Length: 169
Image 1 (cartoon, helix red, strand yellow):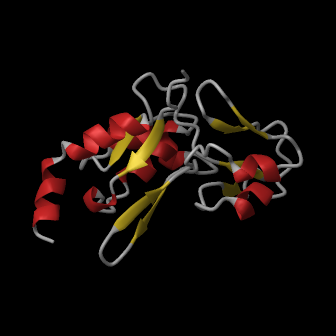
Image 2 (cartoon, helix red, strand yellow; image 1 turned 90 degrees about the vertical axis):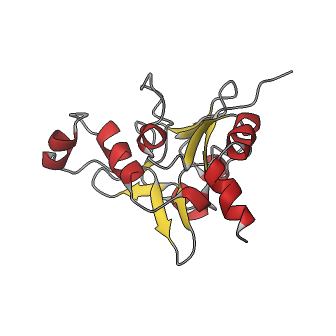
């Protein structure tokens, strides 16, 4: 039996669109790894999660590390790969030619063109951070969760605010 891959899940009802996840992601992917240092970097570091603010719900969008990633199938340069053990979908910047096919085909809009380097950028689950993805650890409302689908369902069912929101509908 294979274990479920760990992914970032979002609870849109808890997202306040504060964008702390975007800032934390950019800082985690900066050369300095500090907020002040990242602000001074040229070019500015790119975040790999984007909050779409709506009139009633907000939705943090990031790579879903799909079971069958369209970006992998679209990449003719072989820059996109999937680690079968972890389920993580990665972009090899050495192989990426900046054709943006992965950007165009991603159904979630989670692969972004980094025009400054001419390469595709996407969530890497902050694989080099021992404490886990920066967006998740910075989320003040608990709208982001990193774990398996089963762990996420358990987490979601224990959120008291969600229970209150459901009771008022």
